[in-house]
Length: 224
Image 1 (cartoon, rainbow, N blue to C red):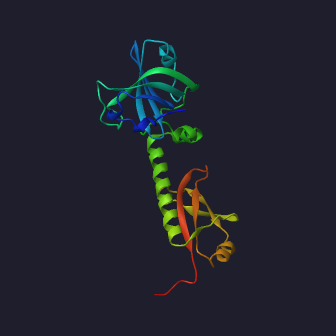
Image 2: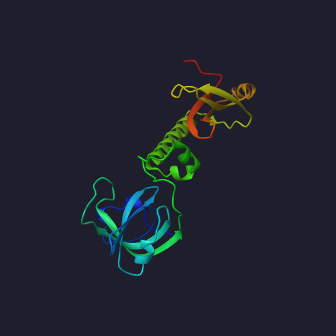
Image 3: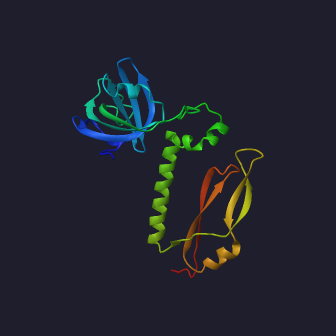
């Protein structure tokens, strides 16, 4: 479907013809020019659409619509050094709308003013927020490091099926009680004869992710 990721294009790619795909993060219409920030998981790249066959399609796009575009990588006249792709833009030659978005209930940005209840209701949109996206990627890197390290130490990751609910009181929000899924003690004891580790995920009452704790079980420890 695509030949490159949006966030990996640099000034060294000028002159290349690329096929990209992603979500419309922002659109700016300047009469005979339409600028579009196209976002995927790797970052944002600016598209420029001039008068032509795709101009009408680009003019009618709404934020969070999904596009596939073919175009040429060009050096930007007005560079934005705040983003990795800020020295280049894509002159769009072909555009295909893969999915048309409705009007979104709030702006997807780090400094959104949307109420928390609204953000939770439309959680699938809020997860596209750049700050949350970075946290998800960081958590993925941390868990990958832990899995590799624990595997080298001879541990196996355990999966707990039988669980009971515990509760703890938030130290940050007065009067808030969170539910905490925790494995049955007998099950913990039954697996502690082998090297195992597992993750326990805490959620609040709306089932929103709060944190992950790691428990390590081992026995027959070597004494040095």
